[in-house]
Image (cartoon, rainbow, N blue to C red; front, side, top):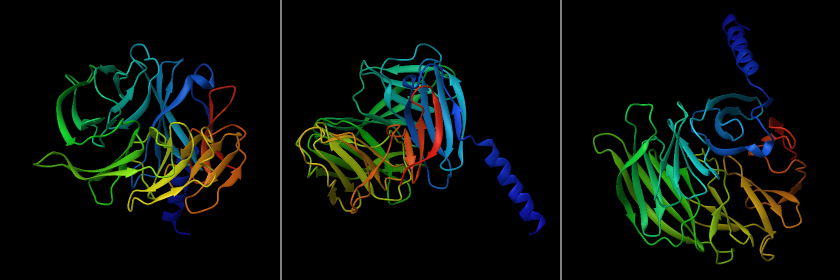
Length: 343
């Protein structure tokens, strides 16, 4: 082995030694620490994971490399933590979430300052550059600019503009996915009895702004005609290796996987057994598979086109998972572990 190789191996070992496979990351109990958002981009080998430490009034961020571990840091939140904060997305300095009162909340990841944007429709996601929000309404899509006076005060909204005029029936959860072309993104929006797939181009440069390229309403065949929920963690631009978007109806009668390239649908084989037959579903980071908990509490690992395999998840579903690794919170204490999953 050459001297250069020795140096490289040593550097890799030093980097690996900084990563933890287990750490107490919050105050209070495990119920006081919840997943807010995650982000994974092409070319970056660590997944950004954002958690809310409610008891400690902190934002906890992890750089997670599945199988290697994680490093984490925290930012004190300036002011009271809003009740029921969740359904978040993250980009740049911005974390944008909803609270129990229906307001959109901005949280500056550098300063911990919390802002409030009332009277915005839900759902809302922050775009990858962190400069604008996109909101889904029953009349289409809006873009909302984000501004900050001096880099320290809470962010506020300005410049609300229409992006797409279209009837969207009862828009619910929304996730932002990478498109097939550079600079393109796909919005997947759960609505009543269907999923909206909207491709948006990011026009950076002289003609700065966002433009809708395609828009399609895909009936959620295989689900009850109820509000549709996208069964993904709260992502801003996950790096998909598979094309799947997972969705279930509000009553839990079933689960489907939608191929965003072809709009073909694969139903979950153990669904369609009445309301409550699918209690919970959580997709992997890359969307290649989904963990599904049925009415009887049994958990299954499902890849579309394959038969579901029963797995033992004694600690419940992981906060986040990828491949055979997951981030799992201890039942009794706010201890987070990078652990191997049973399949």
